[in-house]
Length: 142
Image 1 (cartoon, rainbow, N blue to C red):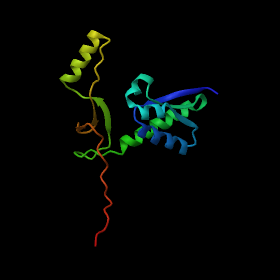
Image 2 (image 1 turned 30 degrees about the vertical axis):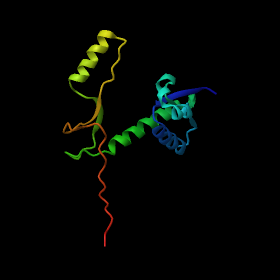
Image 3 (image 1 turned 60 degrees about the horizontal axis):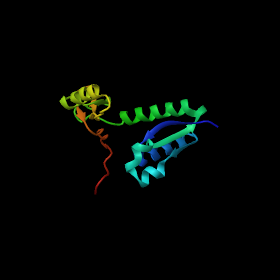
Image 4 (image 1 turned 90 degrees about the vertical axis):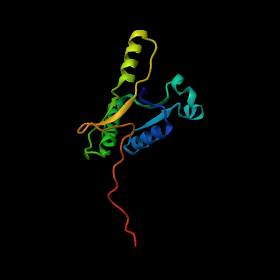
């Protein structure tokens, strides 16, 4: 049986949420290096994070399910300015990211992580976190 790594995580909460969703969809998969990263998160980058491992023959189905979960997650957010659900995750425009790109290009081995933001495709609203969907169902108070 050939196993392949489909995605890696640096956070065991998200890794277990995705694992549970895939198990519910009938996929046989497991997390590799979960306990190592959980016990000593500092070495996560050194060992490549927590790996979601699946059978080679299930790889295409799992990748499609992961794309579907990501789309559902992005559609769950509502822009607080215009009410749109069309968010994308982009590199934050600005001098810091431009300098990062230049330094990375010049020094090639000196990588500086760029900053990312969620941006509304309709009005341009930006946020570091995906806005939550408002809860329109309020409990009745007596």
